[in-house]
Structures are given as C-alpha cells and as structure tokens.
Length: 324
Figure 1: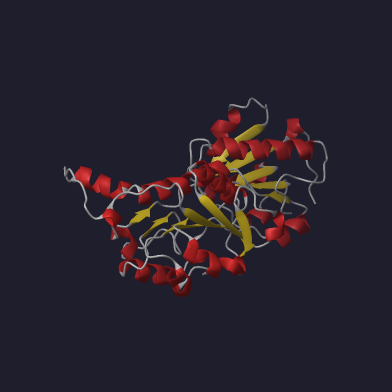
Figure 2: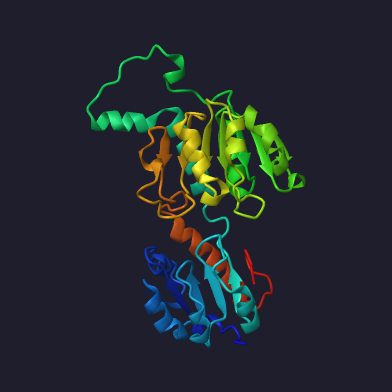
C-alpha cells in the first residue's frame, strides 16, 4: 500500500484526450510536478511516474499493475463507474469524483435548450441559412412562447436540478421537483415529491427536465406510458443520461407529434448513430453531450483536485467527493 508523499515529492499525471488540464494546473503556480498525456497508451507507459492520476474515460485496469507509486485518482467527471473500486481500495488508492463542477454549466444548458425550444430558435437558424424571412403567424399555437406562468417538472433535484429550479423561478415558472428522497427538501422548487409521483406530475408540466443520475430506479424512467401522460404541447429536455429515456418510444412520440418537441444533450448510445431519426426532426434540438463542457471546466476540476491534494498532504481521512 503506497503512502502519500509530501507536496515537494508529489507528481501528478493528467490524462485526457482534449481537456487542457495540465496547462490550467500550471497557472496555479503550485510548484507540484506534473505532466499530461493525451491517449491511453501514453498514460499506461508513464503511469509509473505518478503519485496522482487525474483522468476519466481514459482509465484502464492495467494502470494499477504499472503504478506502484499511485496513491490517489481524481476523476475528471462526476461518474466513477469505470474505476475498479474494490481493487483501488485493496491497493490503498484513494478515489474522488468531480461531482458538482458542472452544476452551473449543465443547468444553464438545460435552460438554453428550454429557451431554444419555446422560442423556436432551431427553426430561426434554419430559416437564416435559407435566407427566408418568416412572416407573421395567425395560428397561435405555432408561434414562439413565453415561459412565465408555465410549469416545469424537474426530475432530479441535486445540484443541477436545484439550480435549474432557481433559474426557472427567476422566469416566473412554477416548479415541481421530483427526487428519490423528498425528505432532502424542495430546494428552489415550489413543491417536491418522490419519483413515484412522476405520473401525477407529467400531465401538469409544460416542460419535463431530466437532471437525475442513471440508476436502476431511473433507467428508462421516461417510456411510452410517461410520454403519453405529457401534454401534446409539452417539451422534454434531457441533460441526465440517455438511458433515462426509452429512446425508440421518444422517437415514436416525436414522429407522431404526441409531444411538442425535445431538447437532448445525451443519448442511449454515444455518439448518436447517423441513422437515428433524432438528427433530422425539426422539433428536436440536439447537442452532443456538451452541457458540462465549458471554458471553465478544467479550472473547476483543478479546484477540486487542489482541495483533495491539500487534504492528502495534511493526512486527512476524508476527501471532497470521496468514493474510495
């Protein structure tokens, strides 16, 4: 079991295919030795030099056998399913997630999708590309809409869901919150209920926003039955995980105009297959799982990392977002 070294002897390996983690870390002037690798092969080749590994999907279990110095793994994302927790624990390697670093980003993205759908920005962009100036519309139901006075059901009232609730209240919306444990409170929502109350909330909602983690309870939470309970004028927004929604059922509901549209940042399989109908549906706004990927993402991760490194150097037992 490796002991954690003092600050002056700590080396950090940043491993990510795109994020500029080492560059942002260097700007903190910590004096801590560090380096970045951009692919898994290089990570496995150099992991033996590191006491700390900062990575996410680049993880491979072979890293443990090649890293006698490794004492701490900081996940770049909130998810940690890819890490072998039992093996890390047996080796005495600590693990922490980056939960909370994208609360602002994802909640703002969810609101952006809601505004894009209700203000018909996708249609406006398409018309712009065609140099088409749309005239006034007699059909009231076909016009852009306002959010004030409308009801949003937010499934998942963690950091992201609660901040979305706060943003929606600023727009004079009524917010129904649903969470696995309503005893944790309603936060900024007007009311809170358990997930089992979803069938009662859906017919009331003009917008249904999914902000929950993927768990056995939430997998395929939104299926044909639930979509059938939504208003024909309602929108579904998913910034949770793709498998929270039964995707074929959603495609069918959209193709039959049983709901007004959807804002989707996550899909069941990623990247989304080129053959998926979601690509070409005019009442769908699709983003490629980028809700949390902002110009501040690396800095937010580095904040969590530095907090945890300070705790390790002080010999503290509890880490921020500790998993192992």
